[in-house]
Length: 452
Image 1 (tube, helix red, strand yellow):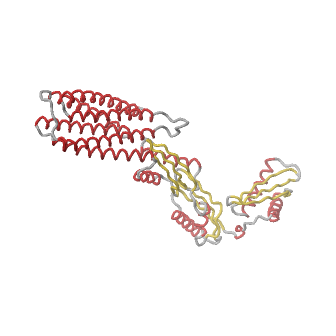
Image 2: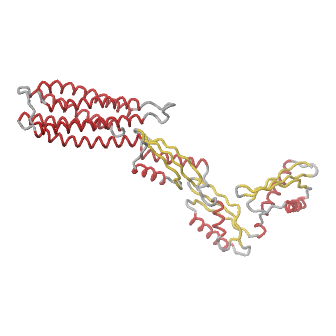
Image 3: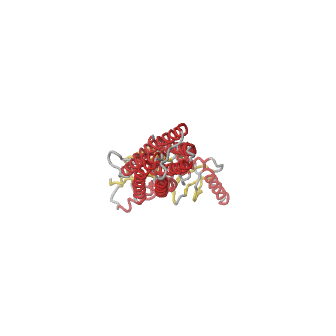
C-alpha cells in the first residue's frame, strides 16, 4: 500500500505542477509573442489532460478485487497507460507538424522589450519539469501508468529546452534552429509513445513477453523435485503477474511433501517476478509403472536374484528411502549375498534419482513364493496345519481375495471352537496372517475371528 500511495502522490503533484505550467506559459507566451513558448504551453495542456487521466486510472486500479473484477482492477491501469501513450503520440505529431510549419513559414516575431518575461516562463517550466521527472522516476519502476507520466515529463523537458533554444535563437535572429530541434524532439517522443502503447496493449490482450515466460519456466523447472511442467499460463495486469501451472512430482511423494514443492515454486516465482499471484496444480509423474514396480524390475534384472517382495518406499527430508526383500540361492555364502545386496543398491541408485538410503534384506529364495493365485483350498490347508501346531480347532468360513493397486488382498473369516479370549484369538489370527503372507508375495492378509 505504501508503494501505491507513493504512485498516487507522485501523479497528483505532477498533474498540479503541469497545470500551473499551462497557465504561466500561455499568459507570458502571448504577452511576449513567442510561438515557441505558446506551443510548449499547448504541449503542457495536452500533458495536463493526460496526467489527470492517468491519475484517475491509477486510483481505480488500486481498488481491491470484487465479484465483478475477481482478478482486481489492474487492467484499468494498463488502459490508462494506453490512453496516455496515444495522447503522447498525438503530441509528437503536433510538435513535428509545427516544426515543419516554422521551417516553411519563416521567422517568428518577438515583442521586443518583453524578452525577460519569456525567459521567466521557460525557467519556471524547466524547474517544474525537473521536479516531475524526479518524482515520477522513483515511482515508475512497477507501473505502466506512472511510466506514461514519466515519459510525458521527459517529453515536456525536451519541449521546454526546444522552446528555450527557439526563443533564444529567435531573439538573436535565427528561428530555423528552433524548428530543426523540434523535429528531433518529436521523433524521440513518438518512439517513446509507441513503446508505451505496445506494452499496454500487450497487457490488455494478455500477451506476455517471451523473456518473462522463459524466466517463469526456468524458475519452475529449477525448483527441487519438479519432474515435469505439463502446462503453464501467465499474464500481466499492471504491477501484478498471474501464473497458473501444472507440475508433476514423483509418485512416492506424500501429499504434504508435494504441497511443499508447490509452495517452493510459488516462493521462487515471487522472488524473481515480485508481485505475483501463483496457482500450482500438482500431479504424480506419468510413468509406465509406479516406483515400487520399477524397483522390482531393476532388482529382478540382476543376475542371482530369484525374487523381490515387500518393497517399501518412503520419502523423508527430500530423499527417497527404499527397503526391500530379495530372495537368493540358499547355498550362497554370507559374503556373496552381501556383494549381491551392494550390487542391488548400486543398480537402484543409477536408475532412480534422489536416493537417500537403501536397505536390502537378503533371504533364501523359495520358488513356492512366486505363486500368485490365492486358492481357498490351499489357504484352508495352511490354516489347518497351523491349527495342529497350536492345538486349536479352527474352521474357515469364507475366503475373499481381490487385487487392487498392484497388491493382492486376502480376507479370511475364521471360527474358533470353544471359548477363547480376545488376546489368544488375536495371537492365532496374527499367526495365520504371517503364514499366508509367507506363501503369497505382495499380499495384504486380514483375518476376522468369531465364535463357533
